[in-house]
Each structure stands twice: as structure tokens, then as C-alpha cells.
Length: 189
Image (tube, rainbow, N blue to C red; front, side, top):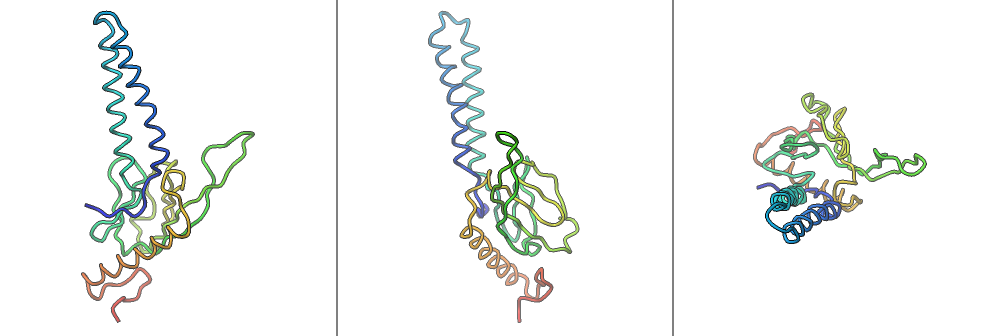
């Protein structure tokens, strides 16, 4: 089991549950209103598809954007399994702003909050990764998580992430005495 550090935007995902609910309602209506068994396969297909879509969306509601497990920061910005980054390579979390990928009326761009994760420069194998652009970016040794698809970002959230990062560094240092921190110094003095 892993510890959740940053949750997804459950409000948007809950709102999208309207689609499978509407499809299920249509499927039930087709099955009940249709005379004979001719339309039952259509109604049943709609029910099954909406059920599977609903399960998938509910699962997405509980997959964190950031998690922690046994010395690794779990970053979930793409399809498939989260990417495990050794916690000793994570330097800090910062609050920033980024432009949206979508333009609004009259091509106006808006700013959204973003969480920046700075990685150690020595981490060559973690310099960049492919991500879903709507969720964030991972390039030049820093990870950007767009605030649209995670819990609301504010100073309090970033402060708690940095505090938890310090605790994780200390835990890893206790398990591996004499380990070197990302800044180059030993935590055990």
C-alpha cells in the first residue's frame, strides 16, 4: 500500500460520472420501452459499457497524482503504472503557474496553478519522461503537475508536501545511515 501525497481532481472526475449514468439510464429505458427482445442487446450493451466506464472513472478518482512507498515518490502523469523516483533524488516542491493547453473565447489564455517538483541534477536517468500533456510535463530534471487535474494547489498543500519530503528523507537516512542527501551533504552529523 502506498501513501497518497497529492490527490486527483475528484470534482471533475465525479462530474464526468454523469455520462455513464445517462448511458445506463438510456439502456434501461430501451430495455423497458422496447416491445419484444429485438432491442434488448442494444440496451444491455449500453448498460455494460456504462458500467465499465463508471468503474474506470471511479478507479481514476482514487489514483493519486503523487504517492510515496518505501523510499520512492510515485508520479502518475501518464497511462499505466506510476513512475517510481527514488526519494533521495527529489529536492523540493514549489508552487507556480502555467498556461492552459486550451484557449478560451477569442484565443485568450489563462493561467492555472502548477506544482513543480525539482529533481537532483545528478539524476541523469530521470531528466525527462513522456507524460500526458493535460496532466503535466517532465523535462530538464523537473516535473510540472497541472493544477487542473489534481486537488486544489495552494501554499498549504506545497508546505505539507515539503514537510512530508523532509520526513521521507529522514526515514531513508535512518534506514541507510551515512547516506548522502541530494544537496551533497550527509544528513547524519
